[in-house]
Length: 200
Image (cartoon, rainbow, N blue to C red):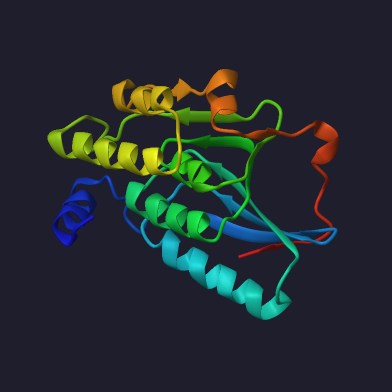
């Protein structure tokens, strides 16, 4: 996305200001796996904070044989989410949703080749908005999101729901939608508490 569009989005509010509560990052060690928790609304600067967080983990723990990102977010900045999604895609990082992943968070979920969902988790999409409304610019952003999602292999039906669902509404992905995305449905017994948790 070019600099002009990014600047315009920031000025109009589609990129949330840095003064808004940022996404929090924490880690858990579960058996031989490193679990990274990404929680909260996605705001400007979260991409850089996430990169610094992961670099810190690599320095502290070294290489783990297994790793997992747990997503819990209502959405937020499309640009920040799309940048994090690119890293998830390139690193082939597995993701898990236990509670909710909606709106811009869906980009991060869709980017993973290994998508896991806990029973009762909510996955939702809608079109982009600016100041809680649709504009020509926000519609353009929705189209860009749709292209990214298509690249990640998201079914046409889900992309269509993103484009046609109003910003003040939410389309919850059905079991059929999720099956088409080749997700893994976890059993309650497969979700173990963390042995160690640290917040960042």
